[in-house]
Length: 366
Ligand code: F6P
Image (tube, rainbow, N blue to C red; front, side, top):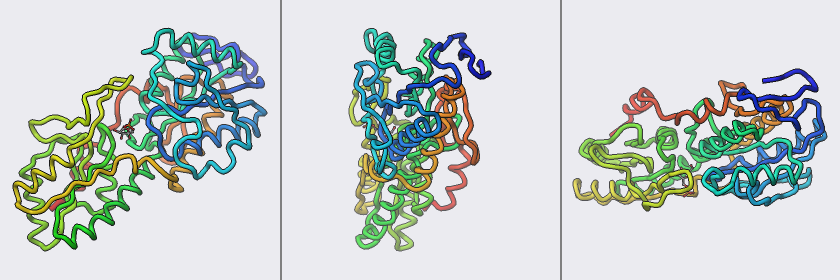
């Protein structure tokens, strides 16, 4: 990567980005892709504030994920537009699961729209899918810097993604509330949380909320063992709370799908394992057992202070990367530092819950 001042910027793949000379007056685009999550607006605000105040750049928003730069759907982003958005959930830019590589001429359209709007570089805020596209676009000569978001916390190369802390907080509060009603009625409560193929939300909310069983996609579960833990809890005159990740799988079974439909990135829609498990528990124990699906509640509303800070720092550092002409990278959290990692590294594989994290939680089961 060429780094010296006022020189042309080249990617590792050898692409020259002629409009991205260091020190140049720039016009940058920002977009948010994939499932929304709390903190997206905090990133947008930080990018706009730093881009304008520190560098005198112009910032333009693209609406609805990659759909925006494909169809030229824009939103002006000045200082006024980002006032009072720090605490707001969702994204003022809108989002979508559009994959430009699945659309006829998608990449060429992006190139044309960026040229038409005189956009020199993009900041793409998203999870594995959005950032996978960002990587391919950078390889294809379109300069992009990535910012990692997802409530699932399953992106490699960063310790945490923003949105995760808020989702865990919401799920934990739900568990606290469900426990009191479960105790009153001597019921087992099965709480299904999101996370797709990673069990981070289940593990963290389960530990924080004192769950009696935590089931995650990383380790298939034995229904008889779950029933044993549930009965042990009832014997001690307490109501069992079981946290199950939407992607958790019973031994010898398969993921429970909400529908067989695939999105543009080939993902299935998960959901239903909680209800299935609640019925199994009721049948095998004879005790009343109910399922609660937290669903999109986990993604909505205002971000926690932790997520606001993390999202803000990611936005500021993404602008630094653009300023340095360092494209094809994602800003990432390592310990307490924000670093840059290659998008190829960030999207290479999902970060799943390690076995030892599950084992250490087991002492609380039953
Ligand atoms: O990736 C975030 C996430 O909320 C997953 O936890 C969940 O499986 C998926 O998105 C749901 O997607 P949608 O909002 O498209 O139903």
